[in-house]
Length: 212
Image 1 (cartoon, rainbow, N blue to C red):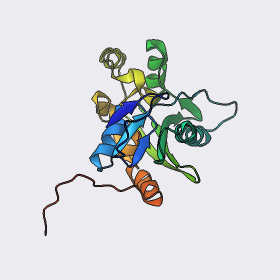
Image 2 (cartoon, rainbow, N blue to C red):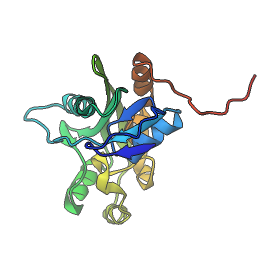
Image 3 (cartoon, rainbow, N blue to C red):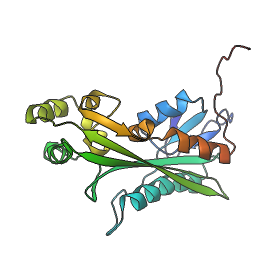
Image 4 (cartoon, rainbow, N blue to C red):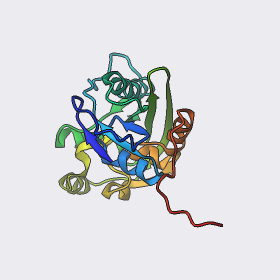
């Protein structure tokens, strides 16, 4: 994996098949796990929700804008992949907490309740684009005030949609999940692979698979 800035150009032996338009280490990990060769370009995008925008509209728009912005930079002729994740509870959108007070309000609202996690993945090249969205239902057990404080002090919630990481310390709060685990992490694998196939991006590259 190579990470470059918007103004850079890859030292291009073209030993990659995709440009990941995200600085998320979790999305990078998932692409690596399924054997995609890629580089990372992090675009500058205004992530503010629009007035009246639903969670589905929000994640779909941001995922597309990230992928499309990278295509417009013309850094590479490879397709770009963007993604975005938002948490929805009672119609309210929960992004990344800006401070402890915002985090505490989020987790208190989710404690002992069910919420939805929407993860959109988009791909674009110079002639085509596509967006797919996964929706996952997550139920939390009751969470104490001390647990909320202790979890914040781990540092994990600060860059996570909804203020928790299901693959990390935050997993102890999860009572039930119905849907895509990888979608809650930040990149739904089924939807991602569907788009990769549509854009002829191979998976399972560089894997040592023994003969049958």
